[in-house]
Amino acid sequence: MIKLIGIDLDGTLLNSKLEVPIENKQSIVKALDKGIHVYLVTGRPYCFAKHLALEIDDRVQVISSNGANYEIDNIMTSKYIETTALETVITELSKEEVCAFFKGNANFYTHEAYDDRFLYSHMNEDLPKALQVTSYTQLSWRELHDKTHDILKILVYTLSKETLERLRKRLSLIEHITLTSYNAISFDINAEGVSKGNAILEIMKKMNIQKNEILAIGDNENDVSMFEVCGHCVAMENANQQIKQMSEYITSSNDDYGVANAIDYYIED
Image (cartoon, rainbow, N blue to C red; front, side, top):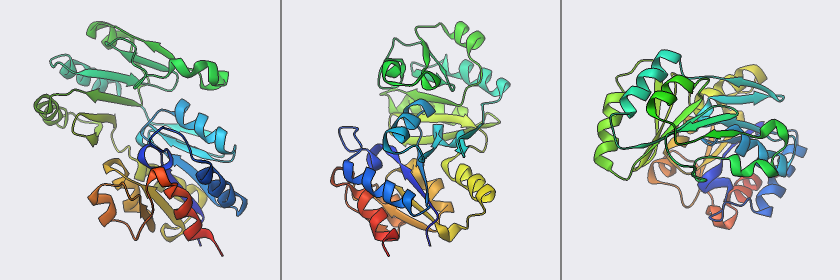
């Protein structure tokens, strides 16, 4: 019997218009009404994920920033990048032509201009006060070094694959951090041991839920750790090949409410 469902956002719950199809919402509520815990599991920050969760149902909980944040009964656990490691990362990033966005719970920092692909202050008018965020932009690397604190995730972005790979190799030598890939032009940096999968393991222990009682739904490389710890894994039709190979079931695409189809397949009597 399924007791917990973990659902990725981009490419999974969200369609190509970054909307949650009504069919997905209805199936999530159906699962909640059966007493199943439902988590949105994402690399995006808490403000974005929690806003989506509340739009679906206030019983939906969140694992955000690749697992650096997770909640149980609305009590949040946060795992920040260690200070010395953060300072070393900033020094290494400053040596390359890359975009970097440093994300805490309520404060975001960058040396770039405001970019609504990676920052979320433009959402504040739609967010409750507790979820509103502040973005500090166009900071120098020295200012970033001095100002950034309590960072959950750093997103690194560049169109140069050579630069990205060179930087990844150097950063992989730094202690107390974890690198997570999304695609050929970006990767994330979190605290050591942070992953979607490890967050789910912590929740499993505290809720006394077993591996074979968890359903995971995802589409991309950053869902691998989640799939590794869940007993039932579903790939979207639009998922990459690695995720499909790890799955026991392939549902329809994110534009064809694949999450709803997957949930209904596993929870219907």
